[in-house]
Amino acid sequence: MMKPGVEAGVEKLKKDQNILKVEILKLRQQQENSHVQLTNARWGYDRENVGRMREMKEKWLRGMREDCCFGTSNHEMIDWFGSLLKSDSNFTEAC
Image (cartoon, rainbow, N blue to C red; front, side, top):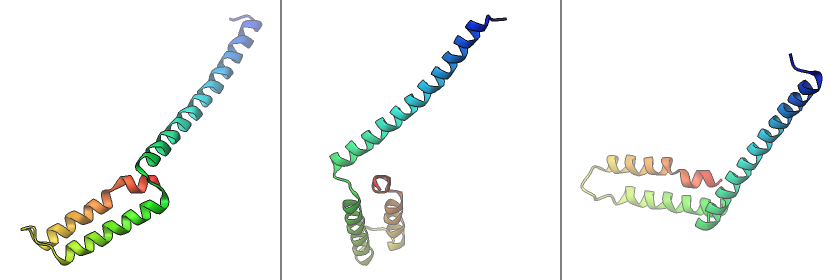
């Protein structure tokens, strides 16, 4: 058995450890948020730009559907371009 003074010291150290873990998690989240903001700023992403970029892609896709001549069937190209639009995570992550 530990002495009462030692037990109190151990309990305080455990509490301090938990507090430090919480602070570390907060700092990591802040770091991640800062990284995302810097990346978005570097690439010029903001909500307005993302909306415009998405509209441009959709307009381009509509044009491709109307004039598709790549040697594959129109349905294959439409499916392929549609999958690109759905899987484009750069724009959705910025929102």
